[in-house]
Length: 210
Image 1 (spheres, rainbow, N blue to C red):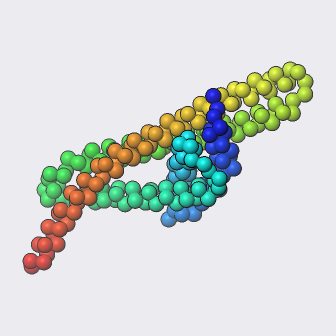
Image 2 (image 1 turned 120 degrees about the vertical axis):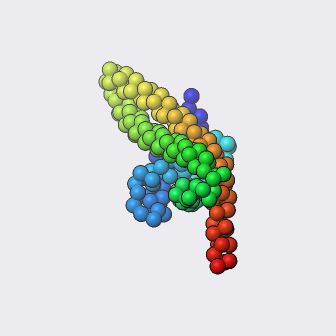
């Protein structure tokens, strides 16, 4: 059953998804259409959560721009953590033997996060496609004249409506998976910074003693 929140989300998504994708793309350091689509999907997922939490959205474009900017900023923070992980993986493990076992674990968590984000991007694209199909079906039903045409158009409208609702549920489920994967990454990435900081301090101290 489609709720008023779902209907509001669908209208906002239809009206602003492309604008937000362009906005996100303009905030990236280089052209990366896939990344822009991924971050746009995360932006709309945040909006969907707000709507379902009962937040009153009077100015959707302004709110989406704010969420998009925060989403991009979060992405760059995660990218920075990933670069630290890469540096750590290339460090001489004899210097930080106690942390060597953490690298495979973090690599696995990061792979899970990336896979979840890919699934979210796919779910967003599927939702966009079925929403367009439903819009076409609604227009066809509104313009049908003959009884047999009306029946077929209404059946198509109902089918695409169900597909759209299912796609929205998949989008929400993919978003929850991203949230869980990101929480796991964030909870463990902090340990990595501490492990990397230790050998660097040791090296500086050794240099100061020469």
